[in-house]
Length: 253
Image (tube, rainbow, N blue to C red; front, side, top):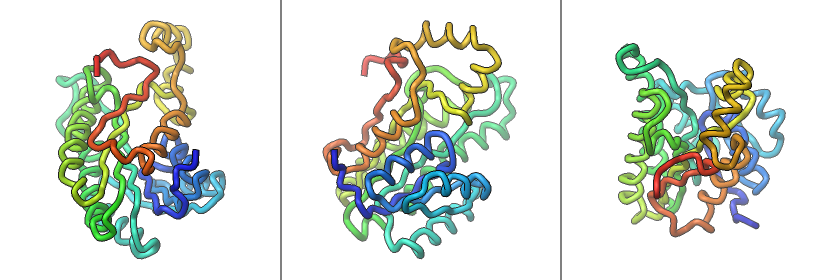
C-alpha cells in the first residue's frame, strides 16, 4: 500500500534503536525525510549508517526543556516544516510507590509525559501554518490498565489522556493526534530481552500465560501501525489510543 508519505518531514524521538529505529525504517521505506533524535551521538551515527536512506540525526536530551526547544528550532531551520512528530522516547524506573523516591516520579513524568507535551505543542505551532500534520505518541497498554512500574504506568496514562484532549483541540487546524499502546515487544536493546536472558523459563511462562498470540511483538509491528496512522489513509482516526499487543491487554475497548 502506498501511504503517500513521500517527502514528508518526520521527527522521531528515541529513534536510534528499538521501536524508534524501526519506525524510522518504516517511514524511510515510504520515501519520507526522516530525522531521529537521541542523547548518544554514537548510537545516532550507527543508526544513520544502518538505516541509510534520507536520514538526519539530532543529538538532544529531551529531559531538558531548553534542549527540546533547540531541537525544534534546529529541525525547522534544516527542514523548513514538520509534517509528522513521533514521541517515542520513554522508559521506566523505580519499584513500587513506597520504595520509589519522588525524584524518580518527577523524572518519569518528564521523560514519558512532559517532553511529549512540550514537543507536541511546539510542533503544532508549525503544523498550524500548513494546515495539516500528524502527532503520534507511543504509550503502552500499561497506560490504559494496571501493570508495569508505577511511575511508567502513571506517566503513560497521562500521555494517553493528553492525546485525546490535544487531538480535539488540534483537529480543527487539520492536525491529527493519536497514540499507539504497544504490549510486550522484544528487541535487542529492550527490557524484555534482558529479562528473557536472565530467566528464559519464567519469561516463556509469562508469554504463555499473558499474551494470547503466544509470542512477543516485534518492533516492525509497531512501526507498521505508526506509518499507517500518520498517513492520510487514517484520516478519520483522531484522538485514538490503539493497542498493538497480540491480545495482551484485558480491556474491552
